[in-house]
Image (cartoon, rainbow, N blue to C red; front, top):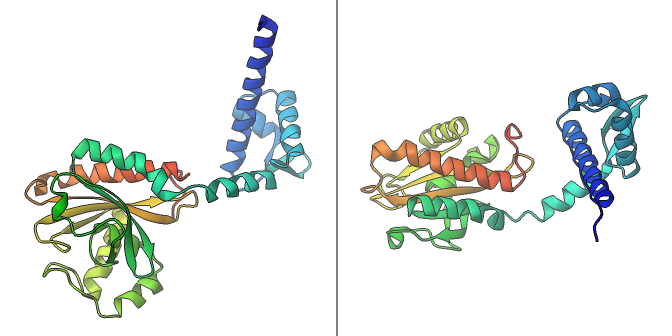
Amino acid sequence: MVTDEKRKGSSDSVRVLLKAMNVLELLAGEDEELGLGEISTRLGLNKSTCHRILNTLADGQFVERSGPGAYRLGIGVFRVGSAMAGRLGVRERSLPAMRGLYDATGETVFLCIPRGDEAVCVERLDGRYASTHFLRLGGALPLHIGAAPRVLLAALADDEIEAYLKRPLAANTPATPTSRDDLWAEVGRIRTEGRAVSRDDVVVGVKAFGAPVRDHTGRVVAALSLSGMSATIPDDKEDEVLDQVAAAAAEASAAMGHAPGASG
């Protein structure tokens, strides 16, 4: 039988745990150490409670003392974070966001990851007109062809992009961009807007819309995209679809541990 005293003890333990988590989140958001007084003030904790929490966290190496009365994150947080990062599979973490986008639009949704000079499709949810789409599950496109590939191209370092653009670039259709100047301009747009549009350059009559998926460090690890027939996604609906794709990519990024502001 659970007594009132046991319930109270359990409730107090949960509250202390939540306070400890708040301390860790506060320290994680700071570049420099914080003093006991500042931590207690910013979290609304009395100093004695805050001091006990910090001592307990220090015992587990989750925080460390960097000076008299000053604290910063400890190696214990790094160990936990590294283990968690190693378990974050981008396909599995992105699937809920992809399913939400598919349910909202009925269009085909893709997830691509970079592999050398290509974007490889690691997940595809088939929507209406799926048979018209060129990229198959497990298939690949060069980084300059299509919305998702160009998102991954834009995430490369400038010298890597320059090296890629120096080689002969194939064209799927007459609309495929193959000139260095055009592709650099597209890279600039993607980096500024955080999204990409492909019109007729993979398959004539098909549009695609892509956005980056980032991990906990802010690095682009994948591109999420939606593809549909140009006839069913007129120009005046493109912004709406782009917003939906960007929101799904942001959801997938959050599932990978990315926080707004963590990207470059």
